[in-house]
Each structure stands twice: as structure tokens, then as C-alpha cells.
Length: 356
Image (cartoon, rainbow, N blue to C red):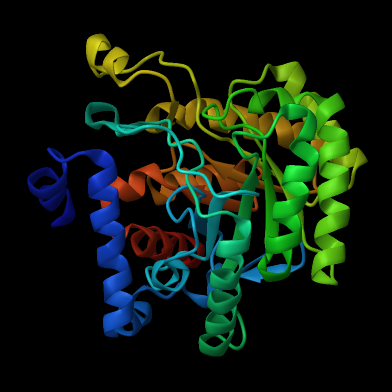
């Protein structure tokens, strides 16, 4: 019998969602600092059969943690000790910023979903970079053969005008690429005004070209570059982004970010409305994210890596996305509901399925 759902109901369900997240994350980091994380890591380590290669990098497992949980690189080592094959840090911006006013994170427990309008709160690229460097070195020492992978997700600073967005992204790429295993350009959060306009291919082409060149120059090596898109794009726009990614020889696409839609929810409409604006993540996103993945796969074939995220809760959800063409799969919202052993459970089931 799983204990965490009861613990969540008693300890966290009544608490402000952002405060609960902060407490839970501090607990995970404390386990690492106290030495308990080393014991956990032995229990949660993915089976060797789950090793997966994407854009030239070997991942311990195809299942990782999406951007948004560790926004500033404070808990990378601790999170990998829970079984995640990779941790995507961010979203990080060129300048430090506090994000939007609180409250800005809301649970829809009946839907196993979350609405957030965090607004890319983070310490800024130059402050985060040394944490990534230290975490990467520590993981390499502990895992000399195949170590957990560090992804870095970058976005636009809120006060920067869209006309100056490219230079803002370049500042982040310059600071963060040397410590990143792969880099993600986030143009799909609904919580930075105007950001999603950058998903238009005419805006996206010069942005991705410039970031890719700057990242490789700063790191002195090729840093795999991916773009993260919204589930709210039309099918035609999804096809356009896929063709652009092929044309620019990107390494991959992450599908998808949160949605601004509010359809099909079990939570009372007045409660949803009270939460206000923001991106919806979790179980309600499952079907649309899978549809976007399948559409991307149809256009791109095997030419680049597809990373699936959105509504992933179980090992079967992970397998469904792998079967639909994803090489890697990420989760986040279910982590809040399922607890610290969520990734390990998914990895064990995936390994059992591969033995069957």
C-alpha cells in the first residue's frame, strides 16, 4: 500500500501550493545533504536495461523531470537520487526576476492538475551557472560511466522587449551552455507577456539559429538544442515548427508546455475561475500532448529527438509516449501528487515490461 497519497492529503492538500512545493523540495534536498540520498540512490537507480541514447548522450532512463520543479539548480543531485534519468533545470532568464505576484500556483486535486502563473521566477543565468557546473562535476564523480543528464531550459526576461529577445536568450546561452548537457529554448510559457508570439516560425528561425551558434561557441562543443512548444498551437503551426526544426537541424522538440485551455475539468468552474490566468498542467493535458507528439513524429520521422511531456502519471503513460515516437519522456505535476518514489516506481515497471 502506498503511503504518500494519505500523507499528501493530511500534510499538503490544505496548504498553499507554492509553500507546499517549497517544503517538499527542501525535504528532498535535506535527504541528500544528510547522506540519506546515497541510500535512496541505491534503491531507486534505474535498471541498466533502461539506458537510452538521445542526441549522442546516454541517459540512465528515458524518464526525467521536466523544467519547473527545480527552477534554479538548487537540487539537481538530490532529484537524481530519486531515480530521474535527467533533470531539466529552469526556466532560467538572462536577468534575475521575482516572477509574478503570489498566489501564483494552484492545485486542482480532482483533476490531478495544477495551474501556475509563476512567471519565470529565478536568480538569473549568471547566478545559476556555477550551481550547474558543480552538480555536473558531482554527478560525474558518482556515475563515471552513465550519469544522470542535466538539461537547461531558458526563457525571456519579462522586462525585455520582444524586439530584444534574441540578445536576452543569448546572454543565458552564453552563461549556461558550458554546464548544460542539452539546452532548451522555451517560447511557449503563457506566463510571460508576448512570449508565445516567438513560436511563429519567422521569429523562431533567427532566435534558434543565434542561440545554437552562441551555445556551441560558449561551450567549445556542440550543445544539443531543443525547442519547447505549446499544446495550444494549431496543427498547421505544429507542422511548421517541425519543418523548421528539421531545416535548422535542431536536435529535438519538447512537446508540450502547459495549456491555457480549461475544457473538460472535473473541478467546479467557479474554483477554476478563481485561480485565474496561468498554464494548466497535469492529467487533463494527457490527450492533447499525445496528439501533438504523434503529429510531430509524422513530420519529423527519425530525424530528431522528440521529448514528450504533459499528463504523464504512470509507467503506461511513459510507454505510450515511447510507442508514439518519443525517445525521452518527462513528468512534473504527478510528482506533486505521487511523492518522492514516483520516478523509481515508473522505472521499475518499465524495466519489468522490457523483461516480459
